Length: 219
Image 1 (tube, rainbow, N blue to C red):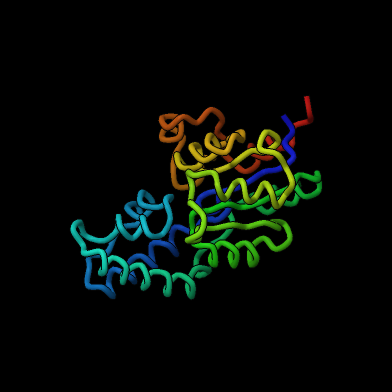
Image 2 (tube, rainbow, N blue to C red):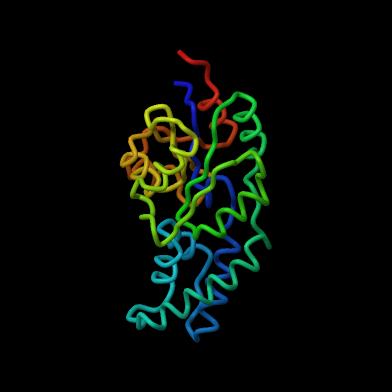
């Protein structure tokens, strides 16, 4: 099927943000006097928003007010350093260009906090991604469909003409809740075996393979 809109997850799908996320987590943990985490631990912790990321990263039993302090340290560090090592995955910019040339609308919906989502999309993608939505206190985060619905309204595309593309089980559930098709990608923070185990029905292993799926002629 040729879709009218593609809604992308951000971290692990369009951008490789893991090193900067891990650096910010460990800067916050160190500032609060807690042990640091490995890159693989942080990889396993991401996907449900930064509050859940920090909740998973701090020692079990950490008091809520100390967890909140660590979260604020994380946000402050990440906003300054979120471009240090982050970059689009190879093949992503040509994919976005091809979608734009084909007249297919594009948006990003992420559980990263909204200010960072908008800033990263502006800096790395510019007009290729005209709609970028992140986590905010007034809207439920993924896997709730609220931010996907908001993106679809902004693009003026119905859910049955859109596909959600992401690298995690959260993205699979989000697409299901929003009533969109779903394509999972295995180059990000979760591998194919994990995605299959969590219900993925279509997996692209490279941005080039994803382009083939998204730009296939209408049957």
